[in-house]
Length: 299
Image (cartoon, rainbow, N blue to C red; front, top):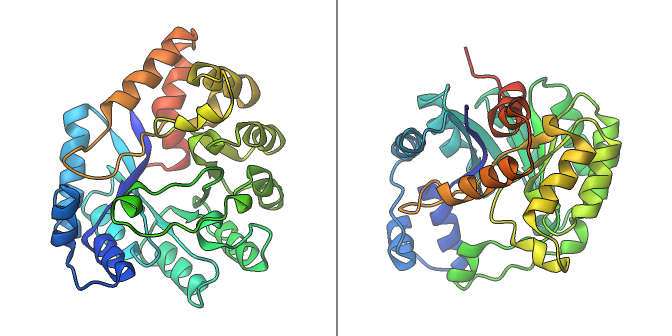
């Protein structure tokens, strides 16, 4: 079965440089990484090479790599340009930034990235804001480009490790607010990661109402602790009942090295899919086929 990972973070040197700036220090990426006991990512093309080698090691065909801070589109684009059949580039935009539209247009039209990532809780911009609508309208004019919207609980482990504040407003991360956008732009694929990350009920309602909404399965999904008795098995079973296999995208939320690709998350989710008696055809959609439909390989 083809395995494609719809959710990996591309922690580039520029990403760590941005964290150092937010910390108010003159540290370079390598110094930050040594403090974290992580590997220095080096140049973007080399990090792309390492990701592809990691995918090969685990038998993964293709993966999304996400620019995890606004302004890091070029790093991901460089890696994707070296491995266009293996890596798919996503990028983050803060809609409140003065250059948000210009960055979005360049990332898609010039850098050929395939999805924009919105983090309403992080950037304090509601999905109902006119600046988000403008971005969504532009995305709708570019067939094959998706919108990824982080909802629910938001925590960024690397920020906590470095003592950086995370003043996120989780009230802005309700999956129900994705629905008006998805209904307004029915040809645009929308992706809500982590099954809604604690707002599972709302994610299911949005999934049911909007046929262009997809849920990704990434991370350990520790948010299940907020609903007493809820298990990941039940999450999968319910999401399949509401949206069907064609709207689930397997992901791991892998990010840094030397940890690399999170094989354990794949194994857990594979066991759940097997245990639920999901057909071979539907399992193939979840673990690879839906990814191929949304992001067909270049060329």
